[in-house]
Image (cartoon, rainbow, N blue to C red; front, side, top):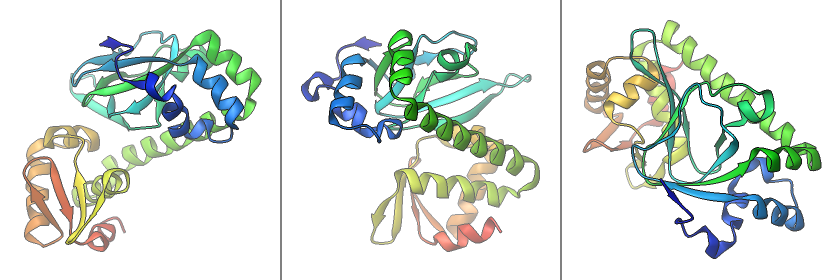
Length: 237
């Protein structure tokens, strides 16, 4: 982990605040106030940012990169709970409710973080209550996503679970391609399996079947072209 090395100083941290949905209702003067509170850190791929059970003393905002939130099951298997990207945040549990971190967080690639320390964050919330409302909205969305994942693991077919995660990645990371939507996967096959509660071999086999059916085209291990998104959505019905 490196401190003050991500080049944020060149933009006076404005990129951090402008990218974060919970600050979207603030005017320029208010954003400048938030900007002055930010401290920056850089993590390399594979570095642990937060440990489950720790007591975070800051709100952590992703300026650039991707972070996985995970915990281990009683069987010792990794279960990925959330995938955080630019503009997402974590560490709010301890700051708002005095609770320990419910999951560990690991950088999936070189990741630049903007952090607001506890005392500054608490003053920020007192000064701008609308930020609290937006944090609550985001946490509700996360809970909904987690509940959907649990439901899918128990009731959805494997085809539906894989189709759902591919559509999620398409929405977050997809770019237009002459053949459809090109998606750079944030996870390996094993990571996808952990995310949807399946075996890696099952994920690989189902992806191959989707490719044989003309629904997707795999490009190496990290890229997939969604050739027929409608076919994937039908799997969710």
